[in-house]
Image 1: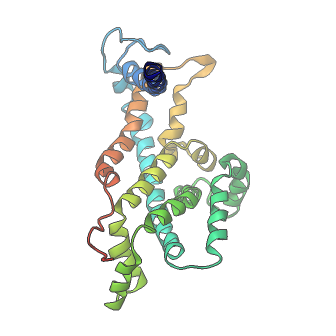
Image 2: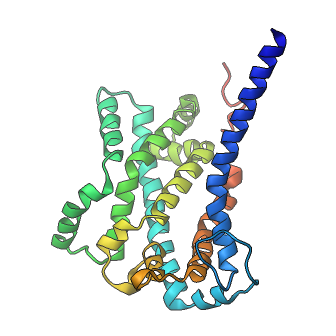
Image 3: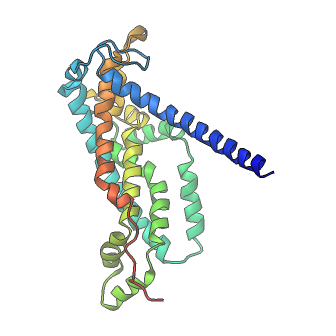
Length: 279
């Protein structure tokens, strides 16, 4: 009986390991293709060892027109929209977290519903609105829409992290004469640093890979971000420069990786509240 039970546990563990290996392969194989093809002078759709290592693919794409200008546009769009999203999310989450009202739950459910709306379903009225208010083909208009589209989920995340900061700390600051805004900036946000980091990374990554929004709202080629300009590598009649596409993908992924590395310590940290509140 014991042997049968042990064999069943072993079989389940092996099945779980096999499933995890298949899942890991689903993520590793595309990444392997990108890295290997970027160094392959004869890259195609197969994952294979390069015929010979070369940097010609990178030399071909590292030009202002192909890479540098679109990347700069992406950094301006996504960086500005992320900063705007984090600021607005913190200001909106603070009263939801600190003050009780019968409207809190309906409001949270409403913004949760807003996160489920497909972006393609609202782009037609958004496009018409932007044309009317003269925001079409402008960087600031695209930044505002990026921030607005990410704000509902950012508010949800920010509120959940903010709930973990004891209100007693703010009450002590209020006793010393601090205002609600001062307590938010000097007490709540510093203590919920990991939460702010999560919201920042999530918002930036979602905007960085967004193709449809800038494709619809920006018309001038010089303003297109990298998420749209990558489409230029897909030529007519199925002709694709796979090596250059892979090299561009490597460069395009670098800012996101650097952002994660820079704030990885904050993501892995906890709220520094030990000993702050005595029970």
